[in-house]
Length: 383
Image (cartoon, rainbow, N blue to C red; front, side, top):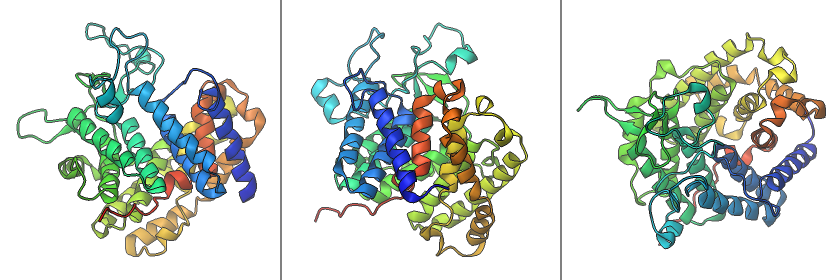
């Protein structure tokens, strides 16, 4: 494990390269991708707090603005133009998230008359719910870091639009389900199946937004109830390292929100992460060479493992305490993953370079995870 200064310096270097390469810190056309940018906003905020330098917070705010003006608007190769919400310029500037946000994939979305091609669909644009929740979290972290409620309001408006578009009842009065991928204008499903952790992402993220801006509009109470009803405890475990990391991060966020009624959920998430981690460690993935490994998925696990050993778990008792202790036996796996991907020769292989932006940002987030994982106190409510 490198020292704290080395970790910070590595993270600063990675984020500087990302900013220059994607048009954030240099005079280049912006290249925005919602998942990567959500982690980047949080990591810039964390670096700002760690260094005391406002330039990092400035980059986070500039990135928010770029994402809204690129991914909140139609693509340059689309016959449509302007805000995807359909709002005029002034109203769109004031409410940039009410129509959702594009993924930022390289290919246009599939037309209504086009047949599904599963291989191509991965590279086609549209909207993913689990990307939108990452952006909601990033916006909320901006509010909590800067004290400006505007960003929580934008997150809530995005949350309201996403819940309305992605959830549906297959039959009247029946239990609700979720689409995995929708069209850019949120009018039709592109992939109708439900993501394994999408209801969980909604439940945890919307609970965070409510805790930040309690009593604010739009209310997210009905959405939280819908997501809670869709979470299937026995279906949460996964052998995917990115998914395991997500379970750990979600458990830690709920623990920080100090909602006593949520500790049953926290224990459930930790148990699912433990089951998945045991399965994952039996696989050959971490013994493979760099070209055979997907860095950002492993780094998602490393970010989740960074939650272990933190102060917020010291108050844990009973089943939660037991699960944290069991998971903590694997905490050194985080440094193994980071050490592997910090080797320059491992970051010169095609599997890294093809996903350089997301890999750089996820590695930086693992090295300096506070901006993503730590939820600062909410700003004081206006009197």
